[in-house]
Amino acid sequence: MSPHRIAVVLICAGLSACAGRTPAPVAVVQETDRHADCSAIMAEANANRVKIGELGSEDGAKVAQNVVAGVAGAIFILPLFLMDFQNAAGKEGAALQQRNAYLARLAETRCNAPVEAGSVTSKS
Image (spheres, rainbow, N blue to C red):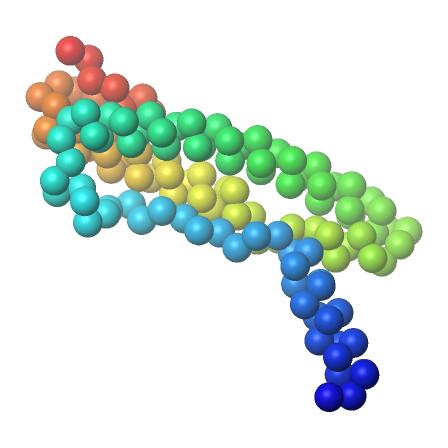
């Protein structure tokens, strides 16, 4: 392989790494849901809320990073490659919120008490 091709491959690999991580959203309905009891539903919903908070912090940091890179990119072209356009944290957070809404509906049938989608805690 010629040195020019190696350089092009390395540059492309490096630039694609700067684009941010690939989103990995959770499925709203999962195979294990049919066997989950009330306590398992509540535990997962609570864990999801913690993760949503963490993803919110990550999303805020990415917005700040993109603003800085955009301003610096007005002067130098290289910082523009540091911008994250994949919005992994936002997509994952939205998927977790949809999952929690589904868990709230599931909890209504399995916990014998009304629950709210935002909290997914039983009111017993």
